[in-house]
Amino acid sequence: MSEGGFDRSKYQTNLGTIHNIKIQPETLGLTINAVANDAPAGAVDRETTAWATGSRKRNGVTARKVGIAWTGTPPTGYQVNEILYIPVLQSSVFNQYLVGLTGTYLSTACEVVGRIEEQVR
Image (cartoon, rainbow, N blue to C red; front, top):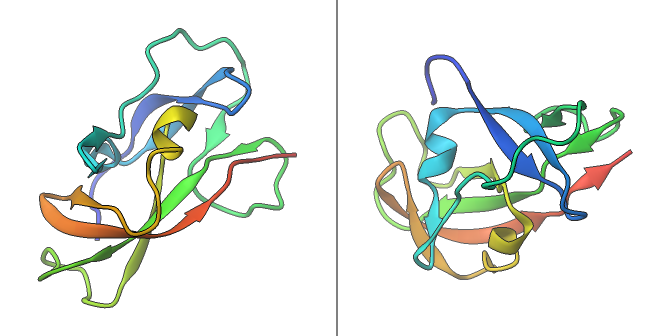
């Protein structure tokens, strides 16, 4: 599993507002169908933080995510049938990450097997 600390990045909501978010460094390494999971280019314009993990019952912005499964041998520390949910930092990118598309995460081949929409409470 992922080791080490978190990086501060930016998250763009479906409405276009930009929030701070803490992510694991490898989150930005997700690429599906040649589309990278890059942070939005704009400046943070909201004081509230978006959440990458945790309960969807909490107030605030909970990030949208895609579920990925390994299509070959998983990286060390991961299991063959494991599904990982990775936050997607821009809505335009999320709209392109469709179930069944393939790409790489942690330099390993993967496939999108699920999607979770952003939640704002």
